[in-house]
Length: 184
Image (cartoon, rainbow, N blue to C red; front, top):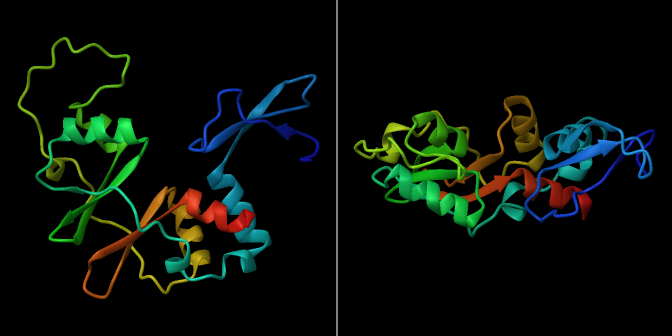
């Protein structure tokens, strides 16, 4: 029990939810705020860093979505919505060259939230290379998870690509991967 407040997953919660509302009690349900994975990870980093002593290669996702520089922004947006992913490493010949997030895609003006109409959207389509971030924080597989967790909380990064010595993308560590390690 979290005291003096409690948090509750929503009635329609899914495994992919990263935030839950915090309320006074199940009876009162006075909204106090939101608890996110980033908050949870930050507390563990400060109070129990030993829980994050494993190497990244033991917790990283090896089955991850990626895209290329030439991929169309709209196509990637649809794929991200369908697969419930919020960010995607960008590769060229298996080497990490960038990263693109939902925010990057929305900021480009080429994509739209599901509720927005298609009216007025008759422009040439952009490629990922025009919206991706090229200054990517990445790590090697042997780095400890605690270092990745600190990067995530200090830089507000939801996922960190993992590259080998040749710059090839070999995995991705997400906040969810870090949280799974903590609750094991």
